[in-house]
Length: 157
Image 1 (tube, one colour):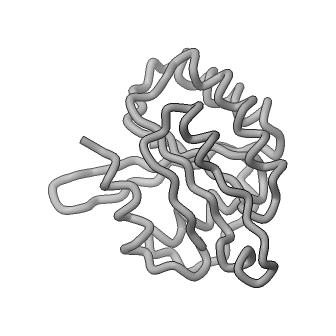
Image 2 (cartoon, helix red, strand yellow):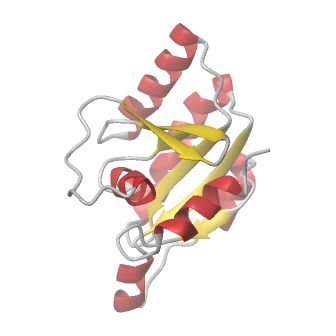
């Protein structure tokens, strides 16, 4: 599974929380591949680098084109307090749709900040357009790892 979104939306934080890593994530400079064993299942979480939509999308596209990797799930991640990060997913989707994954979900992160600010960019319209199975509103910093893992497992077959 691949986590896609522009820089600063907490993709790496989400992955670290799921993996149970306590260290603070750094800026992702190259793709990170993280194995996650769950019972008899072994998932590979891929953290894509890039600050801007086009560089994230091209890295995904080039990797799939070059390696022919099968992607079971794409987690589109955006910040619910930064609507432009949701808008950037449209550009990423243009590239992803060329080698469409089997399933997609949309994760609106930083829910905790949205609650403090009283503002939240909702993603239902984007999820429908991307043919994403579900939208989840999370806080990678504050949600339990089990909750974040469940979002992933609910969408794998």
